Structures are given as C-alpha cells and as structure tokens.
Length: 82
Image 1: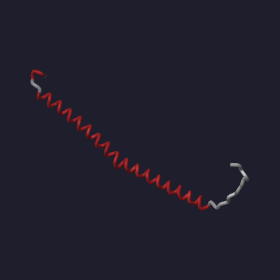
Image 2 (image 1 turned 90 degrees about the vertical axis):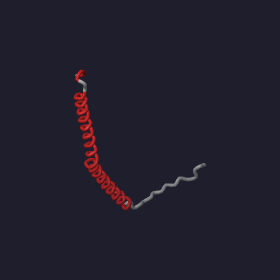
Image 3 (image 1 turned 120 degrees about the vertical axis):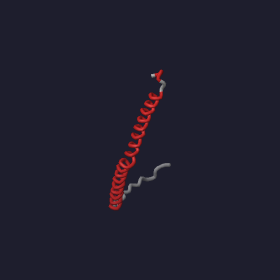
C-alpha cells in the first residue's frame, strides 16, 4: 500500500500518578520479600532443625541396635565357634 503522508505527533502526559504507583508497588514487593525471608528463617529453625535432629537420632539408634545385636550374637554363639 503506498504511503500518502507521514504523521508526527508529540504526546505529553502527566506521569506523576504512574511514578507514584510504581514506587508503591516497589515498596509492597520489598515488604513481601522481607516477610518471605523471615518465613524462610522461621522454617529453618522450626522445621528443618528438628528433622535433622530426628535423622541423627535414627542413625544413633541404628548404631546402638547393631552393637547390641553383635553382643547378643557373640554371647549366644556356641563355644566351639568362639
């Protein structure tokens, strides 16, 4: 399609509302990020640490059980096998 004419326009707008809205959104996002960081720290202390503690306790219990079983086997083995 051939070009008949070229139009140039200058749009002047008041952006104060847009700038204020962007700043407000930025503040809200920063608050949300801060709250999420706090939640992460809380979960680490309140949830992750006890889970690790349970894992360590399970390993310790298995070790004690294995030691006790070896002692039982050693004490119940016939004298000829000792």
